[in-house]
Structures are given as C-alpha cells and as structure tokens.
Length: 327
Image 1 (cartoon, one colour):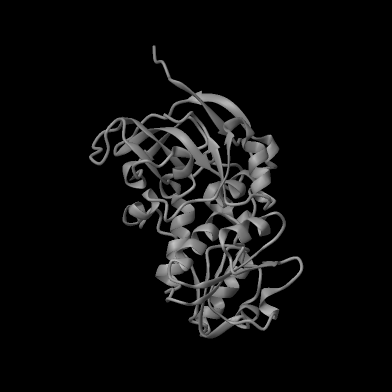
Image 2: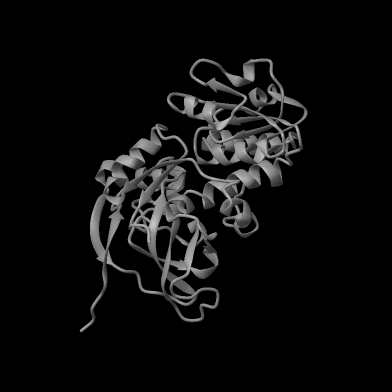
C-alpha cells in the first residue's frame, strides 16, 4: 500500500475568473532528480498568476495549456525551508532557508510544499523574514536588469517609471536614487500617496495626464505597462535616452520589436534571467538598502480575492501571501 502526504494548495482546474480557484487537499509532490522539496512559508502574486488563472491574454495559453492549465497550482515565487532533497542534489541541505523565482522550473508555489529544481533557489540573506523574502526575487531582478543592465543607468539621469506603484517600480526607484537620479513615477489611485512617501520627485496620475505629452524628456524610461506606441514613447525620451519595458500589452510589445528592427535601437524589452543577481545583491538586501514595499501578508485562503485585487491594479508594492507562520 502506498501512502501520500497531503498538503493544502490553491488549485486552478480551468481558465476563468479568480473566484473559481479552490483551496484543496492534494498530494505533496514527489521529487525527481536534482529537485528540492521546499516547505513554503510565503509566496507572492505576479502577472503570471493572473494570466494562468484567467487564460488572458490568450497567447499565454501557449505556455500554460491551450484548453486548461497543464499545471493546476499557480504561484512562481517563494521563500521557505528545504524539507527534502532528491537524487543528485548538491547545493542544498534539509533546513536551508531559501527563496527564488521558480518560473523557469515550473509553477506551484501557492501551496504548502513545492518541488523545485535546485538551480532555481538562492540562500536567503541572514535576518530577512520569509514575508519580505517572498516579495523580492521576481520584482528586484526585473528592476535591476531593466534599470542597470539594459537601461545602463548613469549618475544623475532623469528617470521615469510607468506603472511605478507595484513591486518592480519600488525597486527601480531605490536603484535610481542610489545613483542620485531624479525619478518621476506614473500610476493612479491610492498608489500615488504611497509613491510620494517613497521619494518620487514627481508623481503623475495617468487618468489625468499622459506623460508622453508633457514636453518632458527623460534619459531612461522603464515601463511596467507598455500601452503606448513607440512613436509616442519616443516623444518623452532625451536625445540619447533609453526606453526599457518589462512587460505589458502583447500587441504593443510586438510593435516595439518591429520598431527596434526598423532602427529604434534605444527601445528594449527585458528577457528576464531569473535569480541572476540575487546573490550579488544579498548584502544590500540584508542591510535594508534594497527592501520591498509589501501589501499584506494575507492568508492562503484569500488567494482568489488577491488575484482579482492584483489584476485590477489595486495593490501597492508586492502582494504577499503567508502560507505558514514565521519560525
């Protein structure tokens, strides 16, 4: 007779509104070669979760499953403790405190346990809480790769962040201010007051003003939304300005690729390399120089409401779900 361990997990059996998600008892995943079983302490909500649950934009069904999600448990970011290791694992031991963006190795972090390739994890900086750690890997990497590696941020640059009130914008602001940059932020609603408190030089409500029509020019624009045509974006760039997007409307992203092919070499799309810089940034994370703005934490059973909340853009910073208590 075979006995399976049971865990709580959020299950998405079909595409549809977040309210159809269910908290179920399911088997704890079995480990394959070079996989690690992590007891999830905290996780977070990301764009992938909205797309996997709703099946929108429909192009994402090419990755998640044409007719229903191939992997029914959402979630792509975690902080937790190594519970067990599979064959040939060399990097981790039981009890290690780890965090990471697991999107390259599969989803499934909206659960009490998840099996993850050992290469998709990083050691948590000492003293960091699980709740804070769960808010860092995806957003910080997107911000760092957009601002520093692709955007080539220079001291004193004039920077504009579009969609600045979420997790990526929070880290992009911190990275830019470390280099003495003036940073403007674009968003709306309750995020605007939070953005002022974070230290944005100016905040713009996109329901009231279009930043491409203000007559202002920026050395670097980092876009978390990408809803404008390349010719509109070019109006807001300084002569040697750079534009970098981390995601957005698929049609607009295709337009950017075409514009780049036709000669707009200063317009870029981030192709995320998950967890690439987390170890190098660990000292700044550990001492609080780089820290997330957390919306939460919330309990796992509130996941359907939280994915709706995220999808409607009502959150500020990173939405974090606490799966288990801090130890």
